[in-house]
Image 1 (cartoon, one colour):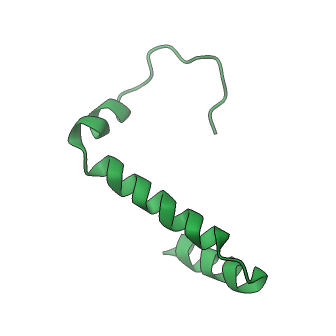
Image 2 (cartoon, rainbow, N blue to C red):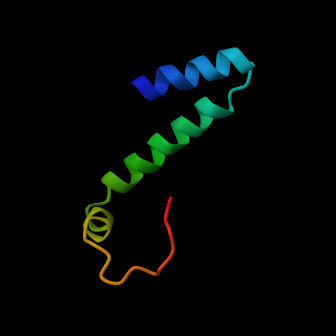
Length: 56
């Protein structure tokens, strides 16, 4: 809920809804992943050989 409060504050201060829209989109993506047991299984295992790139 802290994320939501921060996004609402940013949206209000800047009169821009992008931060809030991004947060809702991120939540929706997370819900999509957790609703698919196969996808959760695939994303829950360690990566055997990292690609040598920093992931952010």
